[in-house]
Image 1 (cartoon, rainbow, N blue to C red):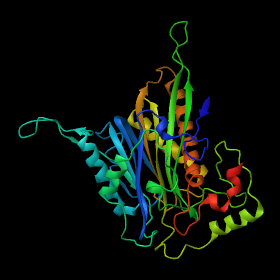
Image 2: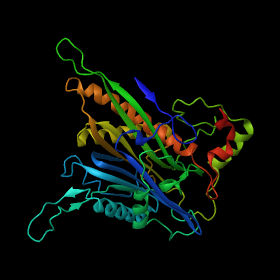
Image 3: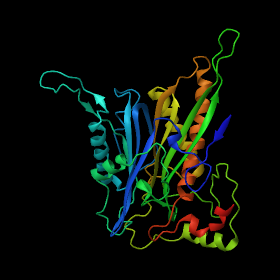
Length: 367
């Protein structure tokens, strides 16, 4: 049994990744004067078990090996999602510095010549989207300052979504892309104790997606999202659908730089459940199923599709029938990530030459 919470933006019933207690999200972006790019960070100050699954043919990532289940690091405190293609990975250093200032990271011990305060090395996985030149100047891309400022802007009740942060320069199948979010809760039957049934466990699953796909989140025939995610949307009238179809099928916008087929959808799926690294990576893997439902096509050679997982560990799962509980969480991960991809485009606003869906199909928002 699942229930969906109301989103803080646009009054769309998607919920938010910050509904997972302990998860904060922050954005920083620049627009105008040759800029249209930004950075989004997901922070788990209390620590979280990490996971990752990379499916796209052209990824730009960092620290994915460190959080592989067979390797040392068992806990991280932040993830950096950013524009700027491979150059944008520099934004991760800003988040690293922010975490270091708060002594959040992998402890490396103390000894001769080491200060009394135990030093840490923050492990900050990250992934990038291709948005170079979308503001007019390909040399304008995120640096460490973007990551630091996004971290300073992190909130537990983030209300800014759409064309912000890493979604500022996003392009979703000919439309303005953005950052989207969603959440759901799953009720897991408690473990039996003798003749008495244990208390049910309510686990929260949340997702954040930066939608910058080569494919589209919108069906050009119906004019509606491929994955409506429970929304009761009215099909836009013929004139709106014709304008939308032209935008989805039209050529790249002049001045947007080279290789407009270079895209990517990246994101994070988080849960309050207590999972190990292999289970958290499996959750990230299944979230790609939701991406493939919401974005068509997905995982192409020119997409760098990457999903990270975070498990905060607030809710231990029952020892008996653990795999049934995991299946409920995995199914919810796919659903919430699909919804986050849809929300990214529905919440987007027009910044540059690419029109936002809301401007081309305004009648859908009156459903």
